[in-house]
Amino acid sequence: MPNEFNQQIIDEFRANEGRVGGMFEGAPLVLLTTTGARSGKPATTPVMYLEDGDRYVVIASNAGADNHPAWYHNLRATPSAAVEIGTETFEAKAVFIEGEERDQLYARMVAQAPGFAEYEAKTSRRIPVVALLPQAA
Image 1: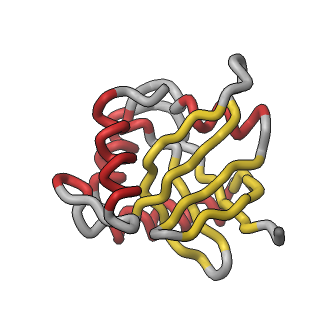
Image 2 (image 1 turned 90 degrees about the vertical axis):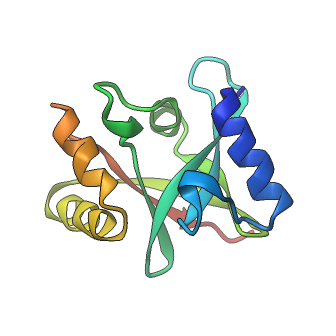
């Protein structure tokens, strides 16, 4: 179950066709529903994304914490998720991006949302980058 902060964002997102106010106003947000690695239950998390062609890129920053967010561990265990953007919901396959491509995508996210540079500076871990590839129904 999402924490209270995330639940408020999820509720606002769903009530307003994918738009939210507050600190995420105007930010490109996706609701990412993964399968819990341990629980096996669905878990929904709001995450900023970056469009890259036909895929959506998400960053496992966890606000610069020294551990990966739960949704990242969930995708490692089961690399598929339900994705909500605006009023659209679709299934996506997770692809874990490494090397130079990871660095380029992270830099693009920093250009879009400068707070991601602070997250990278706060932690010694290499923050993972994940591409979500929409799957045909």
